[in-house]
Image (cartoon, rainbow, N blue to C red):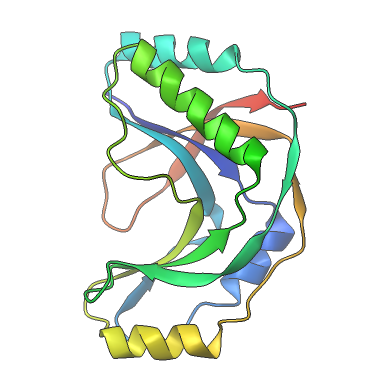
Length: 177
């Protein structure tokens, strides 16, 4: 059974900027640059028939291309931080693309996503980092921004169950525009 999700690929130049944020946080396991992406919809471990149905449904999406940028850094997990992330701007086109994918995946029988959608790139996973260490890390890099980049497609990714995420493989790309 493949583990699948949809996402937006990060251009190499933007990935390079994000990679410059690596280091300086005790207990962080940094994500490899080639695995940076913005998840749109997690499909999970699904059977081949459902995977084909999902790929077919995704191919019917007709949405315009749009520009995106990263607008800062934050962490997930509250008092027990579990990840450091680069936050994405949330243009309406991104929200509409994600919402359409959510509707389509529910139509083919996948359960609804239980969490509110927050577009981001995970930079590091945390196990032993203290909330103080994370706060210091974020304070030192709080003004991080990237220039706009064009989002001209989204992708269907597969992954193997592993610690830390990745490696991720683009199974199919879907054009926008």
